[in-house]
Figure 1 (cartoon, rainbow, N blue to C red):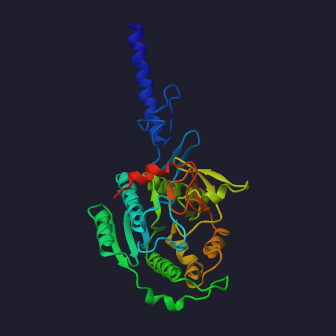
Figure 2 (tube, rainbow, N blue to C red):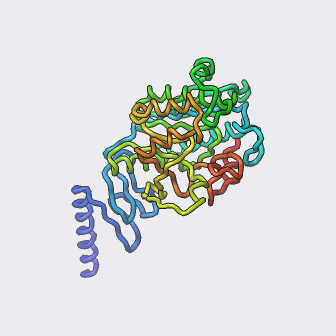
Length: 342
């Protein structure tokens, strides 16, 4: 009887203690079994709540002050051009449309993977397309249809932009027609981004994403921008160039991954509409003059703002296998490719 009484007493005290902790918004963990009674979860599960708090064991809790309310994904597609430099072939050596469709499919799958957590975030995918066939456009619409987010397929009109593009680049060479198309697409994308209301993800049509990518990106954006008290840039790819030589770097802990500060990316990145407006002229300069490297104005922005890249990668850039801005290291390339077949 005495033993039974003690168990009941301990159970009562434990429940009372949990209620007190919940009232004062404390987090507790039973290190004997790695159980968090206030969350009714184990330590291996995701403990963060979007827009409210970020929890990392053993780092503790961060109250989120920078909530994400809207996410616009601007997908630049051109399935008729294999690569800007046509003498190179991509990984797996398929037609360009195959990369376009798998890339878009991976984005949709990743958004659906986090559908329940993103229920309070308004999401829209805008495809800015140039010269894709009707068959490819039908496939794009099929991938985007019957989902919980909005979408729009926007046909690029190069004639609106080509007169603003300098036809001689920084290396004193003629700018190719493919590059003019690319610059026009970027130009149209940043014009669309100015009208967005929160986060904007600019993405080329040759990045295949893991299913966890958008969950990690959005949670990490809220966490880092809360810690730093400012909006940031995020690139989903872990590029090979980052490992060419030993360099000083700074590492932060995101939601489920480590993130490093980087000073270079390609034109696939996520940021806020606020920063798009703040650096609009710099972003636009990429669309009017072909710099060397092409993304030089973007890299100049990274000298003033934080840009983060995940370790390991959240997306596979399907370019030539020898590109320093191509395939991410320590990444299951074939698996991600196969999982996103359309």
